[in-house]
Length: 343
Image 1: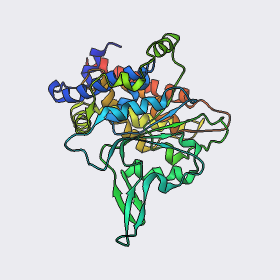
Image 2: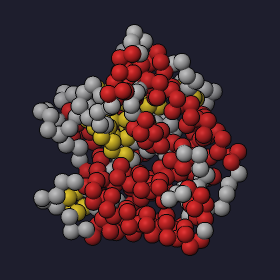
Image 3: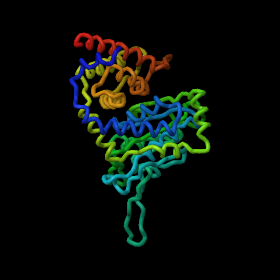
Image 4: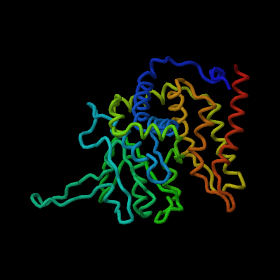
């Protein structure tokens, strides 16, 4: 459908209000594409999640570039005037079966000199946290991430310690048929805005990766300008307040969720939280594609990544993505008919 038809769903907003958001998105996009070849779609989804204040779960076998992608994003965030001194731009946590919750959040340590306990922050105190192979650790440790991802805080010995406002988790997991993995519980999955399966890159992209040797991926990324924490936070605010969402999209989201919940193939449908998370995600995608209004295409593209991992299917059914695509197609067609009536 021609993009200009979507304008009937939104009154124009002054474009200068979104320039900061577009600048941040474009700089990050160039930097990540320099580091990671053949993953343009995944990079766009990562940036959408970052700008929408969500978290991302990446799934694939080792060696597909998940860690490099997360590290390239983390190192792109530079300290600015508003950056807390105790927050690192990027930290990586390798999840293993013997990991403890305190290894992530931190712990109180007794100082012999003063005979007082002092809080020693864990690696979760960072702007971008790579939770590598999160499904290789126990459910107890996985649950330790819940409060941090939902509330941006951790509680140690009944004392709450806030994380930074810019707190973004990229978790990776191996497919569940790999030995030694623990399925993520449903509450944990619901904390992730997107679940992305990284497919093998094309032959041409693999040749580009080899041709870049001996330069490393991060060296290539560092050739491009980064962003500051304050710029990302400002971009988020501009996106939330300046990208228009027609009321029809809210109705479409609610009806989409109700359709999924009533589908006989689905035992547990999409949560209300997922509908709320979808709104800033659609706004962020609009900015990434040079628009100041949400289009039906934003809903169509993002719905499988937002809802598929939240569905629990009835026995005998395994493809949640196709169920979501089938349900969202009806809502997109409805939105497009409304566009044509108002064009």
